[in-house]
Length: 201
Image (cartoon, rainbow, N blue to C red; front, side, top):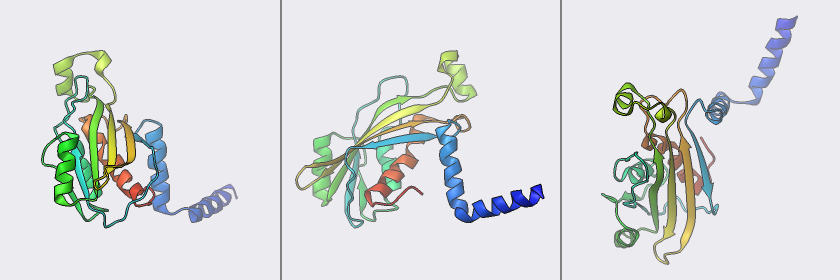
């Protein structure tokens, strides 16, 4: 009798959610608990842009303070990879550049928007044996973290449409061989979806 009640309860609950919803809920709870990578995105405006908008992506040459040195232009590369899935007209600057240069290049390309981003902070903790042999400091063991700042600027008026701050941190189950730049792809793709008014997937 007890097993019949448990079976009926589980069948009833499974009918309320799809498998993908349960998987996404589990992933969210595990990342919130610190087991998987986690990110927190804060936007100043909840604007939407048209799916046929031409977006030019560039990254500032700012190097975040601390010992971590992310690959140059890595934020622009990951933003491009996340945006190209949702916006068919996307271009990326070949190298890190200043805001004025990026704006001139975006206008020259005929882009509607400039997505200008930078690594504001990065903390690359020890995550494998090679890093341990280089640093050998117990206080450097732990989870990687980083902060990205993003500005969405309309090229015709130079109006700042949206600013975003993305805080990312690694998880206990995923910290091996991870760096702060490995944590930014998912939140940037989520930001691209949010610009279209789509929810998290």
